[in-house]
Amino acid sequence: MVKCAILDDYQGVALGLADWSAVDARSIREHITDQDELVAAIDDCEIVVIMRERTPFPAELFARLPRLRLLVTSGMRNASIDLEAARRHGVTVCGTASSSTPPVELTWALILGLARGILPEATSLRQGGPWQHTIGLDLHGSTLGLLGLGKLGTQVAGVARAFGMNVIAWSQNLTPERAAAAGAGFAPSKQDLLAASDIVSIHLVLSARTRGLVGAEDLALMRPTAYLVNTSRAAIVDQPALIAALRAGVIAGAALDVFDTEPLPLDHPYRTLSNVLATPHIGYVTRGNYATYFREAVEDIHAYRSGTPIRRLG
Image (cartoon, rainbow, N blue to C red; front, side, top):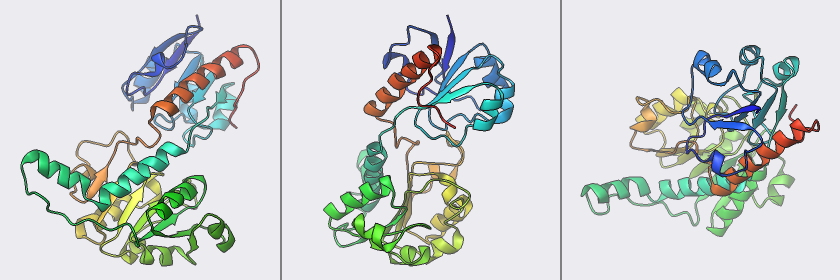
């Protein structure tokens, strides 16, 4: 049978969420960072299924996998795949649907966690520490600044209005009319948004224009009582600058679901900074999303083997 490897199946659930009987499928739960080890693990496979951007597929990896003919990624966009190299090596790349609601829901879990000090209060309670030692931020009447007002940002804005928050937004292409249509005020500049917000949440696609968009000077514009939330891509924020700002108390704290290196190294400051609420990139990790990912991955495999690939990328 055709061999298929499913990479980065951290929870070990892929094989149980779809019918893989048409292929000889195996799940690899551990994240493999070394390319030599990765090639050794999957070089016998015609099909590889990857989860989002957990394992990059650059040109040199395609060159080392001559048997590979189909690469399936969850989602319909994956910046870590060199699509041109895939074409040169005769590899078909396909994707799957992905719901936007799970990352919106996680964004609000993180905002609420920061605003009400959930992590320090719960930790103190478990460890027998002080009973009530933080004072929460009132969301009602506070200002949420959204860097990005696309599909995700618009949904986040809708929840904010339900909490009675003022919502403002900015991005390079945003217009006052589009902001108003999404129920948000228009910030004339990134700087205006940062200075006016109690909470800043990022909802942008990583690109040449957005890489490093929030740097040290930008963080310095934020209020010392303000929080930064990033569930998009780590590289949108200058990471050393953010760590320095958190250590110095330039901002009150940050909630982060995305990191430059994943899994996050054990000695990384985000694991120990007291004003950081960090989660292991779980924005899209829900039962519904996973069921869609793996069911449609199998559909992609059947379509490819029948000679009519579907949901092609690039």
